Image (cartoon, one colour):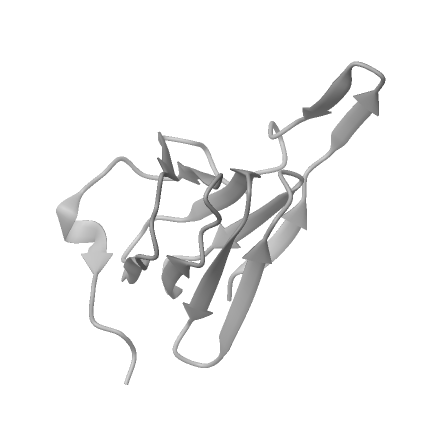
Length: 121
């Protein structure tokens, strides 16, 4: 099941610096970000192999997960929080704030065959 991890951050009068290195449990092969989302729902899939790390670096959004055994809803509203999404987590992203930028780090390069769109029964 997906789980939240806290990313190390350092703050002083100049601002904040959040570190991702050595905190993500996989080698990063793909990076993308989602922004400018209206009231649409994104995702609605799981993967055969890919693990993802989702960080809302601006604004907020929610990610709903179902691994076939349990469901859980996560609020991402801080750039210090990172949601690790396992391959068996059928998930969707929704309730994006107008200023939301969702950064996603993935363990695999894009491959259409890695996607499973059918939700669990």
